[in-house]
Image (cartoon, rainbow, N blue to C red; front, side, top):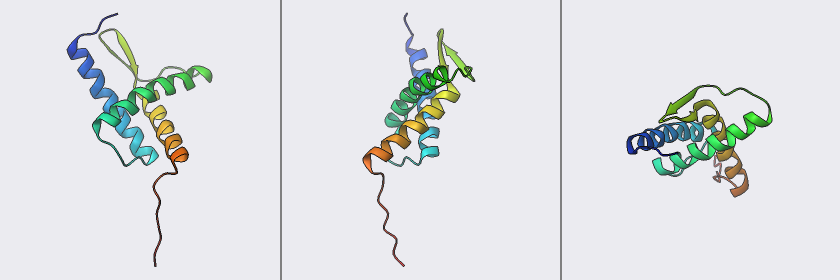
Length: 98
């Protein structure tokens, strides 16, 4: 299957927004829009995998150039992915001083 340049740009924009929302939910602070795009695409893969494993329906699908993109599962998957990365990397260290 092929995708046009405008379709690719629209998918990148949607993935970036979903990744940014997922990062905000999980408390991700680092990175810019490129990291948000990566989190959005990884979240879409991970969230869709979780949805299929638990026999949950596809919710909020957006089709761009005949390519479906799951909005809700992308946000949930990105939040879970960022939370796992924070757990494995130790996350930001906070020192409380009074």
